Amino acid sequence: MSDREHISRRPGKQQRDAKISDSVKARRCAALAVMDVRANGKALELALAETEDYASLESRDRAFARAIAATVFRRSGQIKAVLKPHVRKKPTAPVQAVLETAVAQIVFMDVSPHAAVSESVDVLKSRRNTTPFASFTNAVLRRVVEQGKQTAAAAPPKSNIPGWIRGEWERTYGKIPMTKIAVQLIKDPGLDLTVTDKRQDLAEATGGTPVGRQTLRLKSIGDVTALPDFEAGTWWAQDLAAAQPAQILMSQFDDVKGVRVLDMCAAPGGKTLQLAAAGMTVTAVDKSAGRLKRLEDNLVRTKLNATVVHKDALEFKAEPFDAVLLDAPCSATGTFRRHPDVLHNRSPKSVADLVRLQDKLLPKAAALTAPGGVLIYAVCSLQPDEGLPRIAKFLENAPDFRLIPIPALPGLDLPNERFKGGVVRTLPCDMPKSGGLDGFFIAALRREA
Ligand SMILES: C[S@@+](CC[C@H](N)C(=O)[O-])C[C@H]1O[C@@H](n2cnc3c(N)ncnc32)[C@H](O)[C@@H]1O
Image (tube, rainbow, N blue to C red):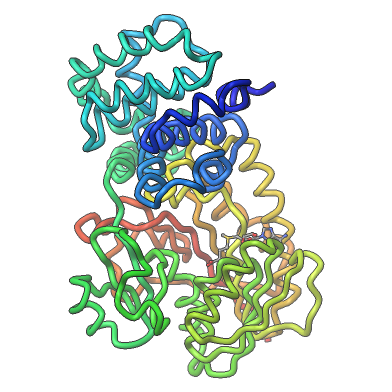
């Protein structure tokens, strides 16, 4: 039986659960999800959704559970430093998860410390096998209330990034950018919208700031469905960096209307929407049915058209396209500001597996690019192996393709070194005054006519 089952599936739990409040359940969901992300490499949203109480909680309690778990992943090094003086022997996984979620609340969240301690202890008491650890946890957390903030302040933000990732980033981007990247991890991210119509009106209605060609930056995430024009479908949530690959693709054509484009790994469809909104004839392929459903819902809401194909792109056959966008499956470590779990459910092996897939998808994308056509490769990863080496390896065996150098991105204030080698690399610490952006690698290639 797994640790997760230990905390959640013991006899007598129904009677015990009848007595516990929704806020204790939310705290328990957070602890269970933290364990699941760590042990099974799951995405946080999925791990939360699979906890037994999550679906039945009010949206406010679900958001609370999500915020606690996200804080554990954002502050992992600092939380470790806070617990270290008080916990000599490593506890079982459920107790460790409850301790971490409690420290997240006490030290980093706007939560009553008293409630955080007593309800975290109640989480342990809600299951027979963790009940014996309740008084130990209570004693540890009382000391955290007294000393936790001070200990956390002394631990540097970069301690929140797992060692193997920190090593790769330091070697690739340098020590100072690494420190700045780590600061982005502990900041609350804003919300970027890609807007297709009346961006200035939406800016005035929301207090957002227009940036780049199509983006509107809002200070906080909130409920997107409550924003103006949600039903009208003139915008969708998309990070400023994530909007660049499709814009680079479109900038290669004098007139994009009717140009045939393949979005090869398309779901949930941010880039498909950009291409379709510009009037391109889009075929959107993805192998995930669940994610394609979201793409289809997005097309309906935005009243845009694309041919949607549920297929493994490696097996997809069609007449070559004028342009192919390969937004490849990747470790997504560049998206840590909104998905801090990506730093904790990846490993060198999972990156190596993705690199092998990227090396198969690139030649397939090339075969689907017509002579004279454009191929864009993009990943939302900061891991060096998923970027330039993939293009270098591809070009070794593709003499009919050449790199189209990208010298700058309109409306984005990025240092020149982000365009070294003719490709684009964005770092989360870029454009700090306007809120940073996701880490992306983008390369544009053209096939000989
Ligand atoms: C980075 S995400 C794409 C994001 C999307 N382009 C957007 O802008 O919303 C990568 C996608 O690749 C899909 N994928 C992974 N392997 C695939 C394959 N062999 N064939 C097609 N799609 C694949 C995943 O399901 C995932 O939706």
